[in-house]
Length: 336
Image 1 (cartoon, rainbow, N blue to C red):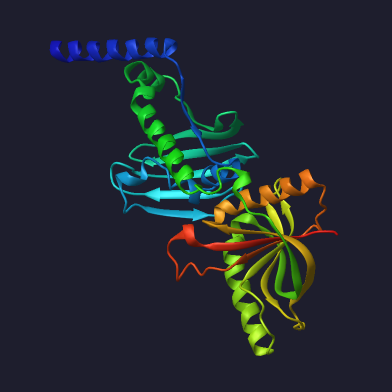
Image 2 (image 1 turned 120 degrees about the vertical axis):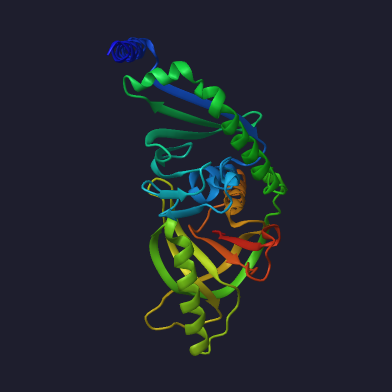
């Protein structure tokens, strides 16, 4: 009985110490790392504003290449990323809770090997030296579990991983945008666009659904054009009537350009005349830099757009796996 009392007293003393230390221990954990990237803002933004971009520089992906990951409604508030892997990565989910032109906030819910929650914030700010990206982590520990913050230095534990992620992002963004690091490197041509009718499906579509929208619409448009014996003048194209940054939606017609004619039940748009053209080579996420270059060129030269932008996807990715060789022709019909 004496030993039991001693053990009970020791345990009670330990509990008391933990409760006391919990009163003075910090409850909040903040970790932050930054890097400066020599690449256009929009190009860097792709890699931080969507889970498809984030996973490419995540320092934890390589811990278990076979982990199962699922992405839903990517690139917008409410987007969900779930993962499940070995003991090094565990199991959890991440949700985009806030997004604007310079900052993305996500909420993390770790499920296994322990249950915990935190928030991660990634900001992308233009600076004189390039684009500064800051990745931070914030978590609150309830009393008295916050006493663990006295026993473990979370910044030393997780900080190196955050720095590794930032370093990977820098290399990735700079290597995938070698030819578009300066707007002046774009060759902007003025051409006469022969009359063409874009037939396809027009819809206001969330950015996160554009890929699937393209796939289904292109197939329908090409099939309809062939069935109607219409002369196709180019490759699958997206005609943008509006690009909504605030609500992350696009008013878009996805289809194909034909010489003339219409198809019942399909949307169409006749486009012709003087236009600005950039022949962009690279991954699709880099086309935003080409659009910015044309818009800047028009502003500096007093050129008025007709309010339409066209992307023609010349290269078939299924036939050319090297995305640095993908050709996208970007047209801006202008008033003259």
